[in-house]
Image (cartoon, rainbow, N blue to C red; front, side, top):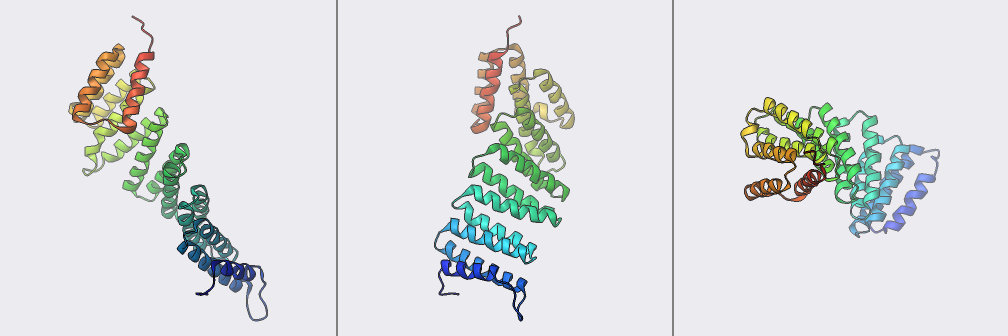
Length: 288
């Protein structure tokens, strides 16, 4: 096996997989041997940086393990396939991870299924460039982590979901997630310091919708949940923005944002969010 090429190993694997057990060997034994040969071929393809072919070999190994009744091994092998596909074809990495996750769910291994769903979300976000699917996967992973008592990991997934929802302009969904993360963060002294940022993000999402009445109500709720919030820099900034948004004063809005930016740099998706809040102010009808 050591001197065989990956193509030769694949050929041998297919032959074993398609053969039936004889007098002295079982069909499951042949399938297990075939799976090992497929994996050996996959590892040789991987060493040669032929990642697509490596992934395909591991997929065949996993499917063969399922036929042999070794579903737990198959889950691990699908995960190996995803590692290879991630280097060349992210869309197939998602397929491999989904197969892995499905087995884990069927086996009741939800903590591991959550890990795989999180991996899928990261692929959609970073390689496959499909933020809406990333959002769905982050939310699903977060729910499973919650069920398993992994609060911190769940919060991290919901925070990623909130960020993605904000980036794609799904502000209602985003603010619900920001508020959820804030609530979860209030439960620990280690994470309370971030609550002010989450409330600010949620408040800005209300303004981007725009729904200034709901934003004002939400700010009252935030103050009730965390009495220190109104006196923080973020709390004062949010309050001042709501005032100028309700007044329709774009110049004052720009001034407030510039003042905040001098102290705490506004970059990336938060800058885009603030531009959309400003746009909403410009588009509000003047009823005076």
